[in-house]
Each structure stands twice: as structure tokens, then as C-alpha cells.
Amino acid sequence: MRPFATVVTALCGLVLPSSSIVSADSIITLTNAEVAADYKPPQVFKNTNLVRNINLEKGYARETINVVVENVDKQPQSEYFLPFPSDVFDRVGGLEVRNKKEPEAGRFDVAPISVASPSDVQYFLVHLPEPLEPSSSLTLGISYSLLNSLEPRPAAIEQSDRQFLSYSFSAYVPSAYQTVTQKTKVKFASSNVPDYTTTDLKSGADPERQGSTYTYGPYDTAKVAPGTTYPITVRYEFTKPVITASLLERDLEVSQWGGNLATEERYWLRNNASTLLNQFSRVEWTVSNYQQAPSSAVRELKYPLKPGSVDPYFIDDIGNVSTSRYRPGLKNRDAVLDFKPRFPIFGGWNYSFRLGWNNDLAWFLRQVASSADSYVLKVPFLEGPKMGEGIQYEKVVLRVILPEGARNVQWETVEGPSSNGLPGAKQIQSELSTHKTFMDTLGRTTLTLTVESLTDEARDSQLVVTYDYSLWDALRKPITFTVGLFSVFAALWAITSIDVSIKSR
Ligand SMILES: *[C@@H]1O[C@H](CO)[C@@H](O)[C@H](O)[C@H]1NC(C)=O
Ligand SMILES: *[C@@H]1O[C@H](CO)[C@@H](O)[C@H](O)[C@H]1NC(C)=O
Ligand SMILES: *[C@@H]1O[C@H](CO)[C@@H](O)[C@H](O)[C@H]1NC(C)=O
Image (cartoon, rainbow, N blue to C red):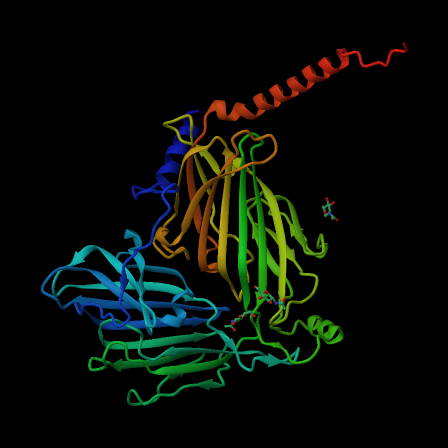
């Protein structure tokens, strides 16, 4: 018992840092502040230097901004406004802001501000945990993904053509404050970049090119008014699919009685690649497949599963998909489920399917050492196929189905020194409900977490759920079952003892 208790204490220390646990019963309300369409944030900061990295190696854009922020006001300040153009605001995924020099101190609170429409920009409000003193500086590390931001150009191609995507952004990074100097580095998936905007914003070539990285700037923008834009468009080769899940429903079902964790996921996938100019040719597909030629169609999805995952299944709208292959993980290696959809998924095509598997619950659940009736469940928030081109998720609904009678449910996501790909807890909607299945009396406690705009950057993120569950809760089901069985016998006995024979008179 002693080693187990030590492990539990260590584990709890590991997964439950001093940071507050967000209670699932309180549905988090976002900042209700609404500001006028022409709202201008108070000019209390100055960006002394800003570097933006735009990564276009996947089927969505990922941007990171490191900016040195100085307080130019006479009072300490703690509210930094982060603007996005209104048309991309809803597609910002996994936004995270932290102190670049002290990343282990964790993420800052970020809340969307609603701006009365019509407005060209919308804001996120970043709350600095400690107000910045006048004339002091801080380096913010800001990261996020932009979903559905890559447009195939041309929009339709031949089946075996190369594909090109285009991406547009402003050479001047959107900012609510004066920015003294700034530059933007763009990393492409290949060095084949046939079109890109050139500028005369600085002396010498702009952008400067080096392999698959193009650098715009540095620009001296001290005299450029905040909010000024300078449109840039780049078009580059990306002969890979643009995999989009319009919805992922992910159910994790804890069976404390059976010691099992059952996972089922339902995907509604779409490929946002160039559409086919002509009809799909099976012959041409077989040839290009044989040559392993790159394609913008989805051929296969590789899904790593935790070691020890068993009973995998993969079912689409037609039925079992037998072309999938499961390689169990040996030792502590991940298992891999390679699944081939029934047909290649070209641009504009949809594919929905469901898959699932079981795991030994002991890998995920621990009893809290200090209290016999408390449990800690640590599970992946998102798994999903692992593809070089990445996956964007427009909406993820995660349901954690706990045992019947589980109470005092609390949850938090595990934060580390770098981004886990998830937005802050305030941008994750949570709800507690009960879910009735066979022989349940109370219904099983279900925690539902909903996130919009997520990418596979969140693949390795972890969710911790704590709950109370007593011996009586554990016995409720067998007792209900026994009582149920007993009443059936009693009823049978009563029925058989009634004389129903038709007596001849
Ligand atoms: C992706 O596909 C959907 C549905 O076909 C479409 O509405 C959306 O505009 C596409 N996104 C991009 C960036 O092309
Ligand atoms: C699907 O496959 C599983 C296991 O391979 C099997 O148990 C099940 O009966 C199959 N279902 C259908 C509808 O073929
Ligand atoms: C694909 O799914 C989207 C919804 O995600 C739907 O609007 C669209 O019509 C579907 N396309 C086809 C070709 O079925």
C-alpha cells in the first residue's frame, strides 16, 4: 500500500499544481463587456520590437508573435488588447499568451471582447498577472492557429496535378499600439513559391528569401498608425490534403466496475484541398498510388494509440472498414491504427466514420491517497490521426462519462512550460449532466467539454478530472441488479402459483 500511496501523492503533485481547479458546475461566462464599433484601446503600451513567425507547413496557418511591450503610461497597467481582423476572429484556435522570459509561470488569462458590429477588428483582452510598472518592459509570447485560412489556387485541378495554396496577411502585424520595429518570417511547406507580394517598405529586397523561409521586414513602423494594414499574398506548393473535421465527438467512458476505459470517436471529415476538374479516374489513381506520387487526396490516416489499446474498430457509413490495419504497440511503444478510407478523399469530398478501442483503466485512474472516495482521472484531451499535413477541428465535443453516482466533479487541463494547443479554460465550455444506460438508477455523471477551433497541436494535451465515488456507489449497480432479479423471481413464483387452468364445468 505504501508505494502505491507514494505514487498517488507524487502523481497528484504532478498533475494538480497549486493553480486553481475550474469547477465544472459553473458554466463559465465569457467577459460580457461590449465595446463600441469604433473603440480604441487606451494607448498605454508601446511595442518596442515585434517578430512574427507564420508557419504554413500544415493545412492551417500557425502564428507565433514575440513582442517586447513597454508601459508608456504613468500608472501600472495590466490589460493588453490583442486585435484580429473581424473575418478571422472566429477562426483563431488555441490562443495562448505567456511571458516569453518566464514560460514556466504559465499562460495569462485571455478573454474575447465583443465589439459592436460592424467593425474591422475584434479584440482579445490579455490580463497580465502582475501590472507592468511605468517605463518597464515585458516580452509576450503569443501563439495561435488560424483555421480555414488557406485557399487552394487554382480552386480546381486535375487528379494528378500539384496543388497550390494561397495565404493572405498584413505586412504590418495588427496591433492596438504603436510598434517601433517589426518583421515577419514565413515558413513554407516547400521552396516552390511561385507567387508572393514584394514591397518597397524597406531598402533592399523585401521579402528576403532563404530556402523555404521568406522574411518580410524589418520595418521601422514608429510613424505608422496602429491598425494600418499592408496586404501580402503568397502562393505556394502544398500537394497534400487540407484535412478538416467539421465536428469530432469524442466519448471516454469510465467503467470502474469493469476496470475499463472505452474510447469512441465520431468524425465528420472534409478535405478543403482543390476540387477535381474532371471526373475521378480509378485507373489514374491506381497508377499514382503505385508510384507513391504526392496527392492532395486523403489516402490513409495513421492513428497512434496508447500502448495496451485493444479491440479497435473502424466503421463508416457503409459498415466495417476491413482495409484498416492495427499494429499493437510492443513494450511501451504506441500502437498504430492505419486506416484507409473506402475511397480516396479528394478536395470538396466528405467522409464520416467512427472508431473506438478499450484500455485498462488502471493506466488512467488513481485513488487520491488522502481520501478513499476521491479519484483522479488523467486522459488525453484530444488524440486523433497524426498526419504530416495536420488536421484542423472546427468543433470538438469531449464527453467524459463517469461512473453512476460520481460527485464533486472538477476538471482542469494540464499546463506545461510551452503551449498545449488548447485555449485557456475560459474558452472551453463545460457542462455536467447525467447519462442513463442499461440498469442505471441515477444515470452516469457526464462532463461535456466543447471547444471551437482546435488543431492537432492539441494532440498531446491532457485533461485531469477529479471526482468522489464511494463504495456504496460502486455497489449500487449490483444491488439494483440483484433486487431486480429477485423481483422477477418473486413475480414468476406468484404467476406460477395462480391457477389459470381452464376447468371443465
Ligand atoms: C472549406 O470547405 C468548406 C465546405 O466546402 C467551405 O465552406 C470553406 O469555405 C472552405 N474553406 C476554404 C478556406 O476554402
Ligand atoms: C465488424 O467487425 C467486427 C470485428 O472484426 C465484428 O465483430 C463485427 O461483427 C463486424 N460487423 C459487421 C457489421 O460486419
Ligand atoms: C460536406 O459536409 C458539409 C458539412 O460539413 C456540407 O455542407 C456539404 O454539403 C457536404 N458536401 C458533400 C459533397 O456532401
